[in-house]
Length: 98
Length: 493
Image (cartoon, rainbow over all chains, first blue to last red; front, side, top):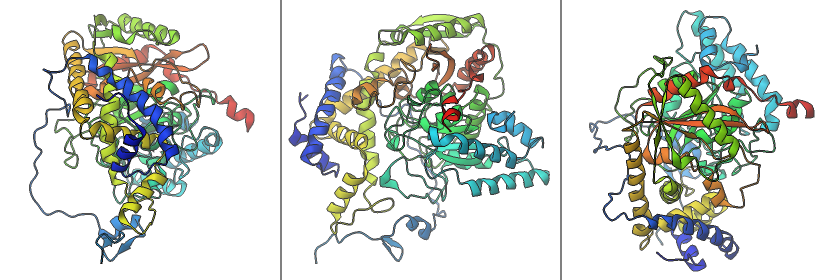
């Protein structure tokens, strides 16, 4: 594991998560995040080569349901939480250039 | 006796028996809130919806007059944490990014409360997206009713404080790493985290999906049993919800605990555990023994790795769950004219610092080159932690520990040091990682008059034994009858 999460890496990772950090933000987060990462690297004390990962506590198999048409939420109610809409759709800025 | 002081089972019995009306109960609570909440800030500013709850109460009273039975929670006002969706009611998860979201549907737990006759009463304060242990990652922060200079715990701090100050008959919270149990301990009330999968998460705004579970905060153990019996059970809308019969947990609650084997893990009584907390929990164990239980010394050897495991898995899941806050469908949007700019500016401007910290951390541990070293490693250690419990439950029926290493800490004390804040959940996190049920119940007070709670953990799906042990203890002590005097409010007002 890398020992230090550099300011450049923090900026890069934040960008992946669609956060644009200022330089001041980066220095604010850098020391905390590095301290937390140092702490969680404690897990390296354990040998886990033979251990299976646990994603879910309950051994659930695929949960199937019948493929039936059911009533869904009314479109106008679903759209009621944004002012950016047109007809029955959410409106977003242009994605494809003209 | 003021109606606001009652428990849910007492109030429901009186309303169903026509001794009091649902309207009287609501009015008593509204008055109580008016008198104390400006100082405690247990409820969010969106309030309790005074008009609509009075209409709801009148409907319950009318049904009773017609000879109908509205259900086991007839007319009982129940508060909900701000991350549980109620149709048409402001539900913002303590975050400005989701303001002013009004869900177009009820979550399953909410729907079941309504079906049982309860009145959805008020939206309680919480740390933004449930990320916190003190209800300070929001504004204004909730005050501990026992001492206004201290936190109520978190992230369900508003729900815990509301119940402790008799501003709610009972409340729902959510518990991802201790967020029901730790505030219950800090505020001197009962808090139950059910087995993962026992209560549907449909309509719970997700934080860490493999750990999140809805649970009740109540004035006594019987109410915790009652509420779980109402909100639990299979729901096809949550694929992790267990298709297993839901018992009525109040039946057999008073069975004696003779011969119950209580495991006491040595890893929970270590350096860092406050002396007064340790003493109170030891006394609680003695009391359980006096009631007929047997103590078994056990070991949960991977306990010291729980916090580290959690702070990889929870942020990883959160970073994925919180990707949905992009400005498109609900909440706030920064309209920058370009799609990417809209995403970035919306998230940058409206997420708080702790949320950003965890999104960055979670994105990092899932990113290419680090996934195996952090995330996969944590999932493997999660297996080891679960195995510890499986081994322990071969020789004991429940496990008893402190809920939190200290009583409530001071407001602001840990805000500059996230790691110290994370370590306050050291005794509660393992139950989420292992998916097992756990309850916190009051077991004493510190010299400074702060409540102390202890935790009883049980086998997966064995809430019954956990509740029986808690009930037996509660009945043999009087801790749950104590309430904060709130002199600090009456003096200043």
